Image 1: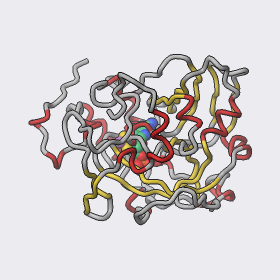
Image 2: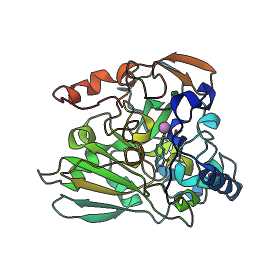
Image 3: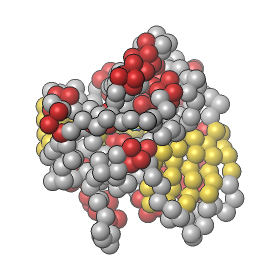
Amino acid sequence: MLIRIPRGWEIKESQVTPEAVFLNRRALVAGALAAGSGIAAPAFAQAKDEDPSAGLYPLKRNEAFQVDRPLTDEATASTYNNFYEFGSHKQIWRAAQKLPIRPWTVRIDGLVEKPFEIAIDDLLKRMPLEERHYRFRCVEAWSMTVPWGGFPMKALVELARPLSAAKYVAMDTFHNPEIASGQKASWYPWPYREGVTIEEAANELTFLVTGVYGKPARKQYGAPLRLALPWKYGFKSVKSIVRFEFTDKRPVSFWEKLQPAEYGFWANVNPQVSHPRWSQATEEVIGTGKRVPTLLFNGYGEFVAKLYDGIKGEKLFV
Ligand SMILES: Nc1nc2c(c(=O)[nH]1)N[C@H]1C(S)=C(S)[C@@H](COP(=O)(O)O)O[C@H]1N2
Ligand SMILES: [Mo]
C-alpha cells in the first residue's frame, strides 16, 4: 500500500481538503463511482413515514447552549458533508441514501457490567431527547451551525454501566462495502472508529445525534446515530455508530491511524495551534462566503477546558 502525502508547498489554499490529501487516483475514481451510483433522491427527500422515529420530532430546544451566529441553512448543510464511506468529496449526500437505517442495532460491550445490544428505536425511547444548537468546526477550516436533535452521551454511559476500569469509549461506524463503496478502498482502516475518555463522554456538551433540523437525521449526517463534539475538530464526530466499546486502552481512530501527526486523539479546536499544513486561525462559515476568527475550544471552553487541566505532555490541539 502506497499512500502519497503531498507536502505543504504542493497544496494550494483553495485545494485544502486535508482529510483527503492522501487521495491518489484510485481513491478519486472510487469517489466518483460512489457519487454516480447513488439513488437519485433530492437532499430533502425524506418522507415523514419513512423513518419510524419521525413522530418524536421536533424536540424541545435546550436553551443552555446558545450560539452567536445564524444556523446554517438546511439545503447547504445537507449537501456539504464528509462521509468517506460514500466518497471522498463533499457531495456524498446522494450516495448516502443507500444506507439502510432500519433495522439498526447498537452494541455496547467491553468493560461494562453486562454487554448488550439494543435496537435504535428502543434506545430512543429510553434516552432524554432534546434539541441543541451547536457550532461545528471541521479541521479543514470551515464551519457550520447546526440544530441537532439527540441526547447527552452521559445518558448512554449510565445505561451501559461501565466498570471502574473503563477509561475510554471507542465508537465504530457500520462496515458494509456493498452499500458504502468507499469502504472498498482497502487502504483505509475501516470501519471508521473514534474515541473519547470517559470524562469527555460524560461531559454535558457531548451529544449523541439522532435528528437534525427538527426531524430524524438524514443519512448523509450519519443516521441513525452519530456523535457531536462541538469543541473538537469535526472528524471526532463519528457517524452511523453501531458499537460503543468501553476500554482501558486509548483507542486509535481512523484518521490517527492514517496520519497521527495531523489528526490526533485529542483534536481540541485551538486557533493558535496550526495544522502541520495550514493555519487554524480562521474558518470559512459555510453558506456565507465569510471567514471569521476561530475560537479556543470552538467557543466552548467554559464547559470543557477543565477536562484538560491536569494533562501533561500530550498534543491536546492536533
Ligand atoms: N463514519 C464517518 N464519520 C465521520 C466522517 C466520515 O468520513 N465517516 N467524517 C468526519 C468529518 S471529517 C466531519 S467534518 C464530520 C462531517 O459531518 P457533517 O457531514 O454532518 O457536517 O463527520 C465526521 N464523521
Ligand atoms: Mo472534517
